[in-house]
Length: 450
Image (cartoon, rainbow, N blue to C red; front, top):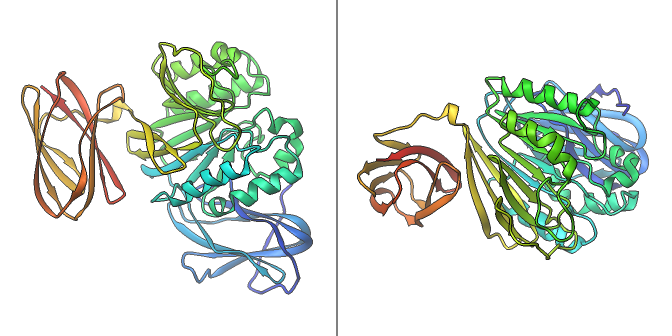
């Protein structure tokens, strides 16, 4: 897609325009980002941005077009920027974004999709996503943003998601409904690579987006590209987690669709060989979590399309399934990843903790869970922990086994500053992970039950 060459100036334009699509963020890197919008008239526009709400810099797109894709460059890594668009007499709401950095080890992202058809349900999912704290810094969509990929349907999509997309760069994948008019799909996004399949780096994570509708059989161009990306990221010291995202899941127990056999045959062996942390898909209008050969497959297709409520009998690899409007919230903290589903009422479900074992050291002594100091006394079965809380708040401590399965939540209540004692039992010996929430802060530790 041809991009517009922009000039940096410090002046205002006095042309009239209205926003059909309010500004949204695309293709963020540690030094660049695109701010996109569409107007009702062919006029020029400008983006004011900076490190403070004063927005000290401006980039002007002097081309009189309906659609604008403005590149902001020379940005600082791991930095929050404020921005605002002026097109003629119209001024957009203020937005902000955070640039990634190679050394960024702690951040939150969200995944959802299959938004077509039911605008009310899609709006409910977006509204709940806007209420989580802290907000995700980047958003991935598993496809089928619209029913038929028409221009009018994309206007609806961007209108519903407007309060989300002005804060979070969106990276979508192509769904079967998006592929009905691929030209309209590509027109609305500024993506890396060939824009059908591509990879994204954010902090210590690599996200690989695969296209179900371009040949990915062994030896194909996309297959060779995917294997090259997996080899590269699996051997990069700074990359601790690899996530793969595409539309049609390889495994499902839904009555509406079968698992994609070609993905099972050609791609799943690569995921296993290169130790992909998790795979995100859509296509099934529900939530489903499958665990096959130590790879977690999450279907998160409850973004607005009519729910698929029929299920076959569970398979041995079935972990959890629910026909519900939802999205996924994922917290990365160094070598650990916490994933869970979130319903439109804000309730969470299917909490899963994954980790890179190569980067986590086992501890037989004290464990520090900042900002809570926790000192476990490890005896046969019974764990005694003394908490020294440095700030009051809602404390939630959850224990997970090495497979990432939640074992118990021994504390979930408001605690004041000071020392608190906690006692609970673990029946099985081995390594465990503790995740602590305190005032929207999350930390992880590992310990051994002797």
